[in-house]
Length: 129
Image (cartoon, helix red, strand yellow):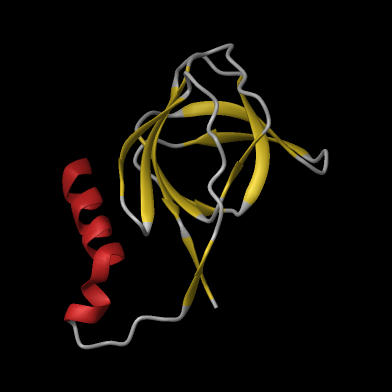
């Protein structure tokens, strides 16, 4: 099922609107942040998107970093503490099989639960204008 969701999502992102006869919205390029290793692994990218695997084991905390607008799909249920660059802190339970949209934002994540935070992330390299 994950492959189908990603395949459908990537297909849409790569131009289904054009093939359906719709006009694509105007966009402008955005800078991608360097993602902290070993927590992120780039699986695939082109000029429009970057697909990333994210794995944060229980007890691990990644440093502050930046993401452009993104969509995440959670492969495991996990409990995290997120601190944004403005100091705001929030705890959340991320549920396996759910999708979340976020960004652009700068944050750090700590895995405060007993299971890995494991997700697939699609980062957009362009912003709609």
